[in-house]
Length: 176
Image (cartoon, rainbow, N blue to C red; front, side):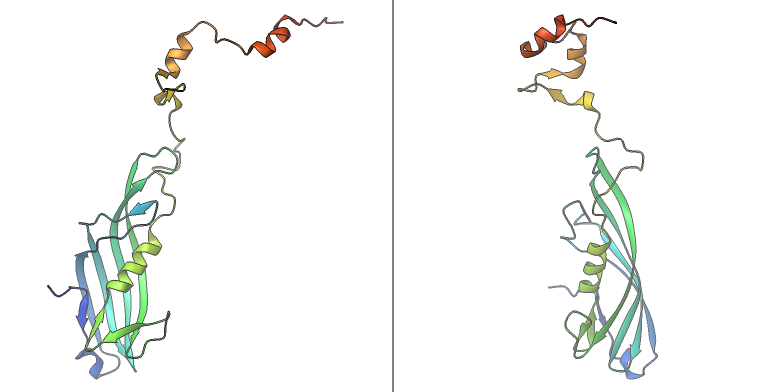
């Protein structure tokens, strides 16, 4: 199995607190999706971070950039975009559950950090544009079997009324 480019050696970095190292990597991360949007499985996720040695660990600060695609919440047309989200995390030999990430031997694995950042930054309800009015009702079929379109209905002379309201059509009120 090939070594992930998101696993970064930090042995030399950790020898002296304050040491820094710039890391720029790109890697596809399949399975990054929420219900409304997701990163294509073959798309590269770009990571541009600075690792800094601190007493007992390593900090990671920088940005993660990824393309995304989804459906407009109003018109359901495909929507694409790019997210750029900041990351600022701490890796420790003895991580605090839910707060810091583990240093695994002499390496830090950026993949969990990147996955968390991208999933939190994906749009929950994407829009193709702020002025999107939603679906065009004339483009959808009508009727129980979907065989007639609205434009065909408009071509008819007068739609048949509900027979229960027929008596009201005959009602005339005096102007007095």
